[in-house]
Amino acid sequence: MTSVQVEQDGKKPGEGIEGESGEGYHRALGARQIQMIAIGGAIGTGLFLGAGKAISKAGPSLILAYAIAGLVIFFIMRALGELLMYRPVSGSFSDYAREFLGPFWGYVTGWTYWLFWVVTGITEVTAAAQYMSYWTHDSFPQWAYALIFTVILYGANLISVKLFGELEFWFSMVKVTAIVGMILICAGILTIGFSDAGDTATVSNLWSDGGFFPKGIGGTLMTLQIVMFAFLAVELVGVTAGESKDPEKTLPKAINTVPWRIAVFYVGALIMILSVVPWHEFQPGVSPFVAAFEKMGLGVGAAIVNFVVLTAALSSCNSGMYSTGRMLRDLALNGQGPKFFTKLTKSGTPLVGTTFSAALMLVGVWINYVAPGKAFDYVVSFATISGMWAWIMILVCQIRYRARADRGELPQSAFRAPGAPWTSWFALLFIGMVIVMMGADKDSRVSLYCAPLWGVILGVSYLVMKSRDPRGDAFAKAAPSEVSK
Image 1 (tube, rainbow, N blue to C red):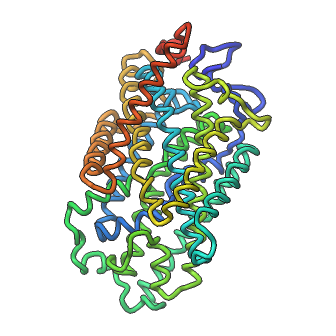
Image 2 (image 1 turned 90 degrees about the vertical axis):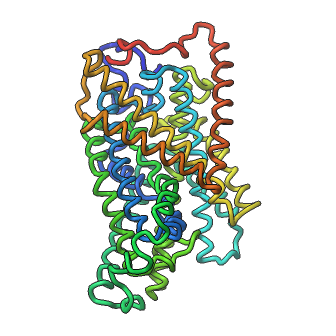
Image 3 (image 1 turned 180 degrees about the vertical axis):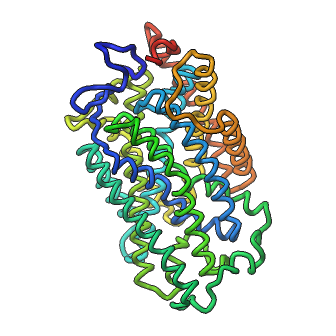
C-alpha cells in the first residue's frame, strides 16, 4: 500500500485501526514523546561539540548567527507543519516532493534524507566515542566505542517504536535539564561571583574582548555551516507523523515550541557561557560546555556535562536509526526502492531498512579506526548539505501547496504558516547564502564536490528503476484527486 493511494473503505491515507497507521506502523508515540523528540532534535552534537570551533571563528557574534538561523528554522518548521496538517504521512518530505514536484524529486529527496541520517549517524557515534576519551584518556580505542554504540542503538530500534520514543524522551530530558542547570549556574556566577571564574565573569565579555565581531562580519558568516548543522534534525518530527497517536494536536504543539527552544538552548546558553568565560579561551574540537565548567574550577560539573553531551550524540544517532528505516520503507512502498525494505517486524519497526542503514553506519567505525582525530570534521560538511536538501524541499513544496490551496484545488491546511509564502522564500535565500559560504570555506568545500556526484548516482539509478517498471506506476506523478482525499 502506498502513501498516495485513494481512500478505501471510508479511511484516509495514514489512518488505520487499533492504533496502526495506514502505512502499517503502530501509532505508539504519545504527546510526551513527540514533544521531547522535537526538543531533542534542536539539541545535538552541533551545539555541544561544533560550537567550540564556531566560537573560535566568530567570537560572541555567534549568538547573532544562531538567532537569525533560528528564525529561519522556525519558518521551515511552520512550512512543514502546514504540509503535515494537510496530509500527515511517515514519508513526509519525499511524499510531498513526489506530489508537488514529481516522482523524480520524491526519489531524490527520500534517498538524500536517508543518506543524511546515515552520515549523521556516523558523525554522532564519532562524537560519542570522542566524549568517552574524557574518562578513559585513550586507554580504550575510539573505534571500539563507535562499534559498541552502533550495535546497542540498532538493537533498541528493532524492539519497538515505543522503546525508541522512551529512549528519546530520556535522552532529551537529560539534555534539557543539563542546559537549564548550566544557565542557572552561570547566572549565579555572574550575580554572586562564586567559582574560579567569579572574578572575571561579566556580561561585558560579550563585547570588551575585541568587540562583538572580533573576527569581522566575514568570520560570522563563515560559521553559518556549523550553525545550520547544529539545527539539523529539527525536521525529524515530520517523520514521526505516521506513528503519532494524535498528529493533529501533538505536531503543531511541538512545532510551535521551536522559538523558545532556540532562544533558551542556543542563544541563552551561549550568552551565559561567553559571559562567564571569554570567547578566546575556547578551542575547536572541545565542547565549550565542558571547557566552561573546567575553567570555572567545577571538575565534577565538567564530567557531568561530558555525560550530557555523550547522551546528545547517542540521541541523534538513535534518531538516525529510526528515520533511515522509515525513509527506505516509504521509497519501497512507492516503488522507488527494493521491495524487501517494506518488511516490518511484529512490533511495527522496518527491519530490513534499519539493518541496512545500521550496517552502513559501521563505516563510522572504520573512519574512527583510520583517522580518529579528523573523523568528526570529515563527515560534518556532507551531513550539512544533504540535510539542508530536505529543508529546501519542504519550503518549495509548501510554496507549491499554498498556491494550489489558495486556488481551491486542494483543501486548506488547519495549521497555516504565518507570512508564507514570503517567509518560505526568505528561508530559501538564506539557505542559498549558506551554501555559497560553504563553497568559500576550504574545510567544507568537499561536500559541494560530493553533492553533484551523489546527484549523478541518483539520476542514473532513477532511470534504471524507471526502465524496469513495466507499468510506470511508481514513476507517474500522483494526481491531485489521489493525494487530497
